[in-house]
Image (cartoon, rainbow, N blue to C red; front, top):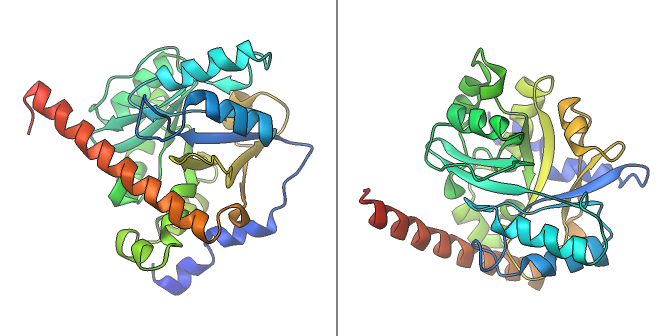
Length: 280
């Protein structure tokens, strides 16, 4: 698909979609410190996302660890928000790319195939989402592999949804030369294109902040009717809201800096993991 054809799938097309106050909002795909490659604590996310912005649902998805989301849930309950305002989550490293496991009852082992990972996520009562598809720089799953997974005859080995808009990826692309060098593929456009052309009747569309910084600016939201996120995903009743005005000028550069720092932390963690298990 050439650049002209991709243009209509630009995330900026979502700017015409206003926030619907009759719908619930979720801030999905966030990383914390010290449990992952983020620079803000789980408590800071609760204070900012739930407290300052008034978002209905916070989902922290640290790399291969539920500890961040568990800490956020404990803190939210302590503040009186109730147990339904924070949902468990983890970004699982698979042999095919990153997968978001949301609402799971326990840890999910890493480095399995996408199909096996989905099976384990569903076995632990979770929902499975393709994280930042087409984004090679961050181990995003490729279009062909996603299609292959969705052709599996067993539904519990398929995905439940797809992250069609990744906030950090878009912030990085908007940081002039840096974004052009690191994100030349228009991965968000390709993800939206993949969903609309092939998966609209099979996968729920979500937007992920992929937040690593300290500001937690809530630039990408997922909206859904009622208060049952799981049910909305099953019925594919979600919509994505993009609020780029919260990420302008120096804030975009700041988030880009946090993203680079996060990548370096992730690479170091990967190196130590493979050194420990004797991998390549």
